[in-house]
Length: 173
Image 1: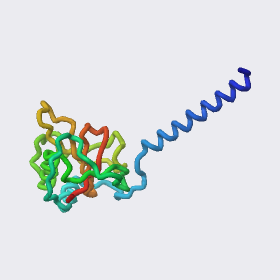
Image 2: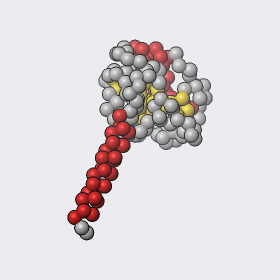
Image 3: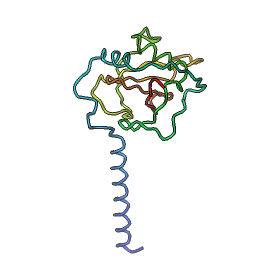
Image 4: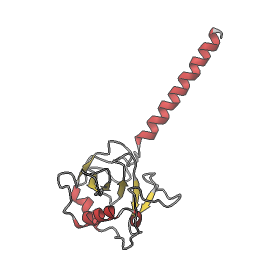
């Protein structure tokens, strides 16, 4: 291989690396349009927004921690797939009931506390915007991996894998 061919190959490799880094950076940045408002929102706003959201009367068993999602239905704001409230595990529906009632929560030292969104999977919001709640995991010796995250705008998210992935909860369905 000639020197000019090596230089060309190196240039192409650097270009590909730069493109990969840009793609990674863009995909981890989340929403920056500020659609949910600006400034700090008090935690009480989360409870009020969730309490006024529609409640589900339906119930369907979900045996695993990962509920089924409706095919092709994605939340336009978060980019996350929707999951119907009725498709959540019964323990998650119980956690939603507790959130709407303002508690008491099974882990008072951990529940109704600020969720930092350090994984940057949920839409970017000001610090204190998100609150987290434990979803009991039967048979687990500790809190388990399941959580519900509530935003001050009333939006709710479910994770069955301790923040590695999320689904947007569609209430009343």
